[in-house]
Image 1 (cartoon, one colour):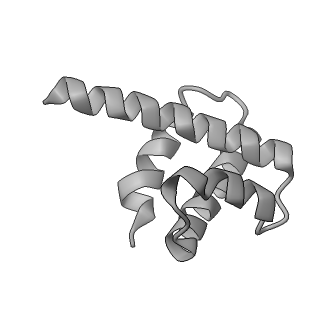
Image 2 (cartoon, rainbow, N blue to C red):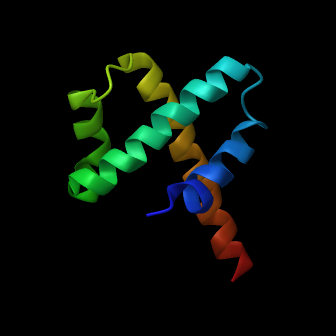
Length: 88
């Protein structure tokens, strides 16, 4: 699975437009990358993945940081989905 080029890369590029603070962007990237790899390995039902990831806290990431990063990732995915529909 190549999450860097297919999912994470576009998210990181988009994130630059949303977060001014470089440390915050790096932390968000790290959380989202970890989350995507965890989802790939965990294979939890899609509707349960986020809650299970946050409950397990697999890499000891602060709960607030993880929630903020995943909120940004959800925002990105919503925008991406709307764009895909408009491009059809």
